[in-house]
Image 1: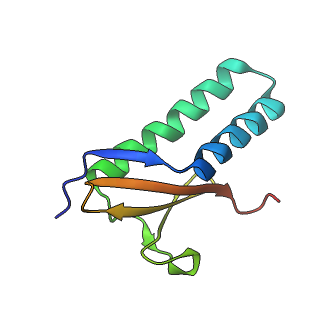
Image 2: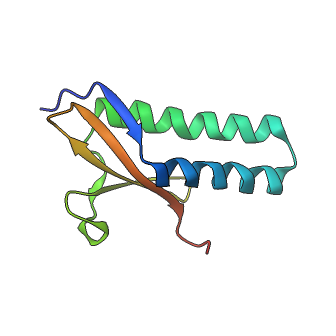
Image 3: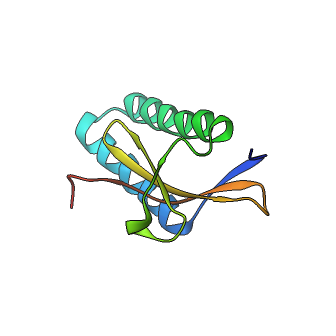
Length: 98
């Protein structure tokens, strides 16, 4: 059983969140919709991974000990860092976008 206390985002994942935010805004032209979507995405990540860190499937095609969780078409790649008691989000992307 894991004792996860935090979730951290890599520089790459943080950059991708910015790109996703820009994409949602460009599609919706609404700051309210964009902020609400991003809040739901982050809340999903935190709710699922703090309670169920192994809920994502193993996705070692992306790297050693990487797991993959999907939220509304977005793939969230992460690893469990047991010594630091945290989840490390390594990347977030939409499979069908360049």
